[in-house]
Length: 232
Image (cartoon, rainbow, N blue to C red; front, side, top):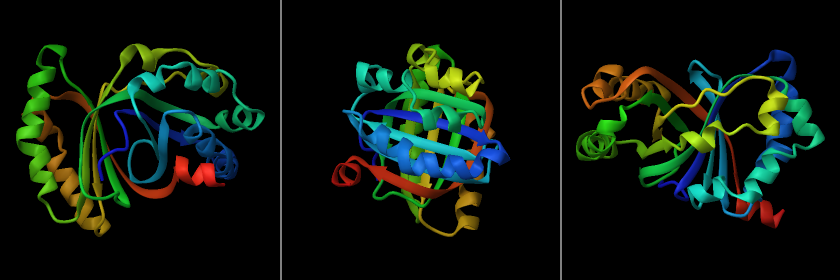
């Protein structure tokens, strides 16, 4: 399924063992509903690692990148709730980017997702995207069991802005500049093999991508949408 809007917040992180139960309760009961309740936010999803350097992947979809740089979102990240202050202290090794959706396509939302964080030199960014859209992306979409393929590019200035939530976490964010997402609906073993083959460092380097390449394989845990939140 195509992403819901033209903007996205992509977040990867670990959680300290002692904070795991609190994280699950806070994230599903308060944090995700709060986020999708912000004007312009449309959907939030969380995934847990099958095999990845960081255990959790969260994706929030918004109408535009401007929503993610606007006053409503800024007000939330700079005024954390008491439960947020408590929960985010358990975050470890955070990678977070406010992104433009450079491409999105596919027929469904998959229960499996592969995330590839990497870099591309600025002077070949357009050529790299064009090469993806000529070859890798349509080839993946033609593969049975592929639900969607999405390309995100970070807004470096917005991603690097300091927030009260970040200060409460006590750890600096890494900012991945390019993110390729592959969603699937089939068996894990087949999906993992496809992702490792098609999203390998060699495949992306041949198209101008640069490392470090961080490929993560995840399964879906929860989706919250604005419609569901508004109705509740």
